[in-house]
Length: 352
Ligand code: HEC
Image 1: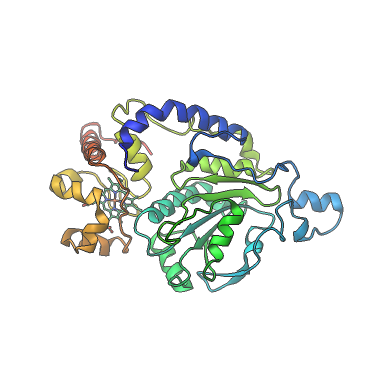
Image 2: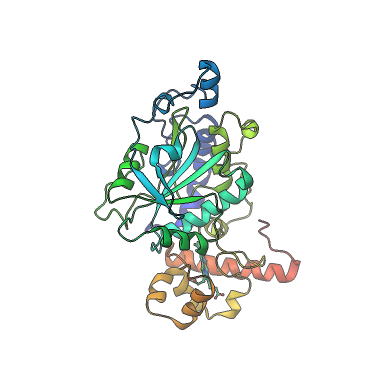
């Protein structure tokens, strides 16, 4: 992350677009970057889903028969969710298209960004969430996370009821990560936990690894394509079709879209965080620069402006998105430009 994101965005964009589109289209072993690597855990993608198997067999199909990665492959320990309900891990994924990710509720940097991004995916899925696609979020902090802290986390981010958060015993989240191919060796398994999530169809055994920064539209399309019954799967959305804007010469818009937009808008009202329209006239530039660079440090120091907002915005801490100084400057200029264009044109340049 110690790189100039804007420069990288510019240089790597064409390359990533081509490879990513290819990866999204064929789901094969294309290596564009870690975040774009599909991990096929078995080659048995055409095995059909549980309903089809049942129809073929003319009988109920036992979980062990749910494809090559079945009940005997996945851990069976019992997890508890934010409502206090208990279920074996395998039952959460058995025969389903799922997205499994890992969080902890006191995480100040990447988890809130990931949660906000997935909230966009959930919005796009609408009523299909909990039916065609299931989100399973698992805490990597069983020492501190309880049904109550998980419920409060869901409330803070205003997440839909049918997206559940689960917690088990120490070491169990890591076991699950290992089985899903998203485990990362780290000195502190809580703070440095893997931000990769697994998306897959348990019934067909097709699983992919995705970054927490995955574009939300591409993610919805991917989830659809994992579901053989989903009619929309014929409609292919690769990165090249995800709404993007031309004219993002300095890369600021790309930074804003990938790091900020899940929680903020410019002129379309509050989201998880405040509307950023005219924030450049509301706050001194020096304050903005420091806030965007290290909001976590400012909250720790109880900066009065930051604390006032923190209380107002349901105590969701703005995450440290680990930006370089140059990127912070680009972002502030971008927010300023967008606010002015809103005043001049009566609409923001960004339309989403
Ligand atoms: C996970 C959600 C989230 C993300 C991502 C996020 N913010 Fe925030 N932001 C907040 C929240 C919440 C607040 C209110 C303060 C608090 O509670 O920490 C805030 C406050 C702000 C403020 C102060 C607004 C004001 O009225 O003074 C600015 C400026 C800001 N964010 C800019 C950014 C920028 C730029 C990015 C991208 C690099 C970003 N934020 C990413 C949640 C987020």
